[in-house]
Length: 183
Image (cartoon, rainbow, N blue to C red):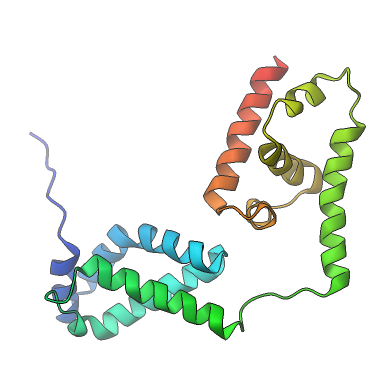
């Protein structure tokens, strides 16, 4: 027999949080933070800002859990609305968004061109060029930006306008494909 306990519902956890139960807040965070972080990331398009949105949301949950009314909707819906509103407010405020001048944008563009040039400069007879050529264009760019230019996974995700998890997955799978192809 296993010692698996059924998960406590978010509604139950909110009731316990309203009674100042810190363990319930931790349990709610454990069960819902990943989903809420994904929602925030889709809106603000930056992991650091998404994490801030989720953190602020859970502070608000601690402070306002008594306002949750199960008759008006589910706990997950309430949490999702809070994250969505905070993320949209962050975008509207614009104070945390980065704006680059033309020189910085040109330098960033040049770094990407370095990756394309490195690929094009490989001799056609080299196996690496052949194997890189077999990757889909966005995946090839992700690998080149990471390993030629030295961009972080987050920078690659931003440059390619994809979620961070997608960029990481592309890079990891592409490297495995390249290793297999080079054998």
